[in-house]
Image 1 (cartoon, rainbow, N blue to C red):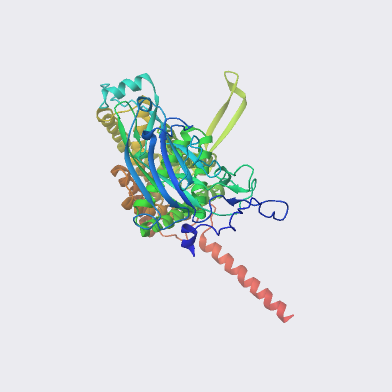
Image 2 (tube, rainbow, N blue to C red):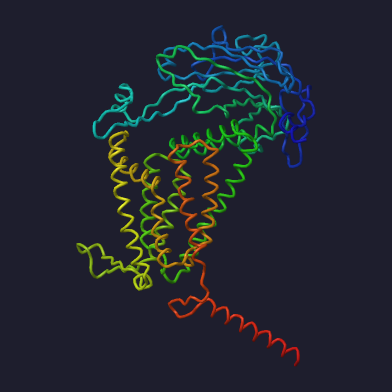
Length: 566
């Protein structure tokens, strides 16, 4: 039953009247229309190539690309493999105009078997029974030039022509060609009503003027044409290969493709940059669907959903932990400020490298959460009476009393002191390496790449101050373990993806860096067990609270027994 939605068309309506009468009107005065091509209608398909949207070169033999006679409308058994598919492949010679960013169009005509699509052929031409659709075959894409060079020597490994073009213009519009296209003739006999066709189908269904009929839908399907397979057209390309496929398609399947085309149109309204990002994301999805094992694909979907849930729970519990936190004893305040710096660098890096829009939003939200934590770890006041240059109010910052009055601040400063001994030499060494051996777009990009690469490689050592504080306090009770548990689960999920997804080796190693820190946290949790007899700064221990709770329970039980006796 499910496969029938993908192979067969909808149930045909009664045959179109041959005596000129109209179909009977339905309730409300709405008149349904019928497909002007009835089921099993014999037809011929003419495919022409032209450099104009309006085709008139019917008498030019070189314009005819493909002629298929005696096609049966709704025939799902045609072709060599009895799957309804017909293919025609040929080489197309490109004119000088097309080589210089000109356009080339595909014109498809469906006519009654034996008829002609040429309006000049008065004997065999029928305007009513001629279906004409066209599509631009070449696609214009922006080519951006990013001059990469060594900042010390000024040399670049790029081709001299690319360097020269990059100096002349930052963006170049080029015509591109894809060698494959599918023509889908929709096997549909739904009684559509003019003005009542839902979007986006209404853009494809056209009605015959003055009648109660509509033309069959001709859909040019290029959904599976990946952007990476498009080749640029220039004056050195004299000819291109072109493979054209004809295939029927069911209404249900066509609706899904039409919805995807509507999605692409929405992205085009948001600008060319957003459109290009959408195409890249779609390519990744299509490649995954085509090349990935179905079982691995299903596992990836499930794991991704679980990863998203854990990520949300980690954010939720992190915010809840800091919102309800009354004391900073045992927590590294400097790590909070470093996380703000780290999130800011990551955000600037993804913006500079034109990363996916969704990633930009997620990084921006993460930075917002880290900024929100600042007012939880320090006290700051705005002095409107004392202003800089008489305009900008002065802002004073001070550590919270729960942080300064505890030993945490001393251990935090000591941990960062020891950490700087390893941190700064590594940073200097990485900076020298990137300047000597790596090419950059500019000094700004080099600084961002330097900091991001350093954080990616050595970022895990910034969690060591918290490990040092735990070691000195001999306690881990002050940590948000629920949030850490969710993040740890996400880390293990990232490890799984590191094995099955292609990625740079450096980034793959980075996926395992947090495992080391978390394992140390787990070891500290094991050796620094919670001491119920340990008294906090208020002179209260967990054992006292438990005794108080048990006493209250006993009093409550006794009260209930007295009520029963009464």
